[in-house]
Image (cartoon, rainbow, N blue to C red):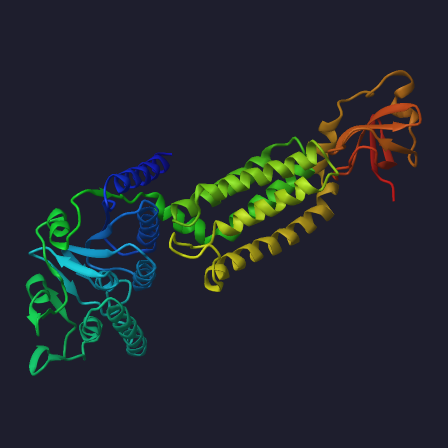
Length: 455
């Protein structure tokens, strides 16, 4: 809740400032510590909040020695989708993966005492990679960094030298960097002019306020802070097919074992965790959850309040499935409303896995659950209390197996049915049956009359 209120406050404040001035405030995104998947989730969320709030510029406040190159690549891709101008402010360090992220922004400013570079791939513990793997990694990330640098107007030779120790850099006849080590630049080296153009950084700034002044942006700024939930969001999104499977199967069991509550509670928790995780990860908005709630309400209404009308239930299913699917689409505010194939690939995979798994589990449960002792104890035993449901002429003892009647209330799975002039409490084997449906008595077990729909 605290995170939600903070996000709403940021968006409202950014939008209000944008109305009051020609441009919105600068949005500052701290990127401190190890580069990781959780940090990528935070960056993606912050970028979307900045764009939604009409920010004038996004400034990455960077201080990192590096981290996961895969996460750096994902962060670079996220920055490439931003429609808001982006700047990196290197406050001390932009090492390794941090250098790749910095090259993904349109401009780089550096603190007076700071450095950028040394992005050669290494193992998780800092050890050298085996030669073959090292050669492949250096080749790939050298090409990736060159492409990123060219896209944002930096010298691609500098980007490659950050990663490849065998890269030599010359500008004209002047040797900038010799072979034998990966390139690392100090702030003063990065802003040095060659042929009237800085080697890498646009300038040196004493602070973010100084940066905004030198870069030509208004002083108004807002900082979006990371939360510990970004780590949780990573696992939720990674395990999203499992949460969907649990939610779908839990809902099915709750409908079959109506009134037991436990499967329903588990289903609700699974779906809430799914939506909360995708919201924190910067994927789902609250509108997707609202559509899910509306769709679920229509389905529940179809089952319990007006069975047989079909249309509300069908619309509800479409809304529920659509909201689950849309919650996994990684769409930025500047993207077209209709997502492309790349954006749809992961949601389609996750939803397909979940639905296939749910079908298998539901089939198994539908076949074996009604015969289980637990089912009979929780559903059949709870549906009718000991003793006859009606006294006198409406006693179930007067109803024999094979008798045919008509449901007078919805059976979910218990309700009332009419046999001739007798109104009797009955129960199904788990299925729901609409009113006025013709019934057939399977067994009579004391006061319990078990029925099924007449074929």
